Image (tube, rainbow, N blue to C red):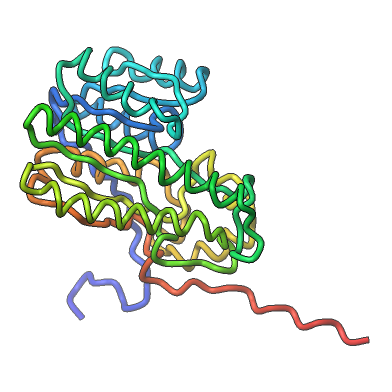
Length: 291
């Protein structure tokens, strides 16, 4: 063993956070759908710090106002439901009206459909299925279509980044059995890769970020469940098994929306603390009490 090396099996203490590249998005016009809270707001702040000019979309007027106060002159806001038939078109039109062009799109909007009736296949209601797909897939289809149309009209390259999930390819049946959500996130990958292949000759890039369990308003159920937290500590063991934080994704967002990724398309990057490659440990099932 080399002098100073840690013994095998002993975790190294890490306290490192990569800074945002200064000017990586200087002057770029970017739409963030779902950019008013959680992962979207964190990404919007990182993009603004890197020089981007933003249009952020959110369905809550209060959250939108709060986000715009944080972002200041770097952003314009649009209130609207991401699943609405005209929201994405209006967002892209606003970016072009204010900034003269569109350079990128980050689609974050979506989330668990558990409250709508999503769950294991045999328990999922028709409303749960359709509502979850509308929120996570149809909204993304519309935003990607609006961005692609504008970039083709401009005859300019650009970057479209979509929010996926590790649950789209690495299921967790004990704690996250929402099958409509998993189907939607799997479809996000399929759509992204198909579009990446088709639009590559036009210089339009499509990529996916797939986070693990991140502490956001959408993840309150999981983040407050001791059993899930215990499982997550072994399923995503980086940095002592903590939950992800929204800013854990920010460096990847800036990279994919910047020219640093100009030769990258059709990729799925899991920012997951190790979720997609680690087993995760469940508590042993309790044996039924004998009478």
